[in-house]
Image 1 (cartoon, rainbow, N blue to C red):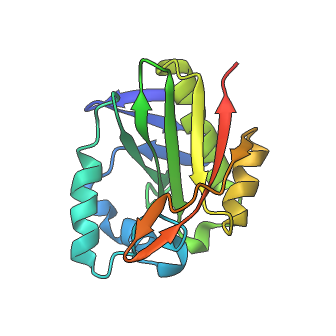
Image 2: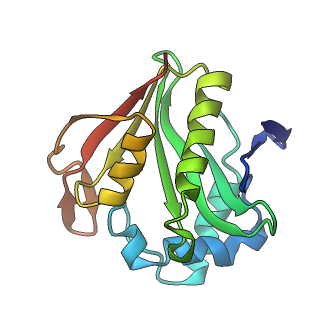
Length: 182
């Protein structure tokens, strides 16, 4: 179910509300982006300060154009507390494809919540954006993320993509997973 607010649709699942980021989400977002363990498989380093997270929050809160990228705060449906993020990026409207990303606070993991959030994102992209191909670029060491996308029907198409991401002075070689919307 999607409700539109300020250009960013709110997506509801049984336990979650995916909504536009707000300034009150800084603590929840920092629990994700400031955690080196959670960001070790991302293509950027963990935020070292809350101010660095605030900068990201300002960027994410303004990401309301569906044409290239869009980000949602993943919030607990009961409390509306930010517990993570899902997004799409690298959208190519002409080719009906995009990439997705996601992160969830450690203490909320292991409950199937990110699967619920990513499924809502995939459904939204297929139904409202008419996307045919959804990709996820995942570090081969991120077994939880690989299991999540495989459970949702994504298939490994290849990799490792040699030196695809640069984080600091280190290069990472992730795998490519995709889902074809029928």
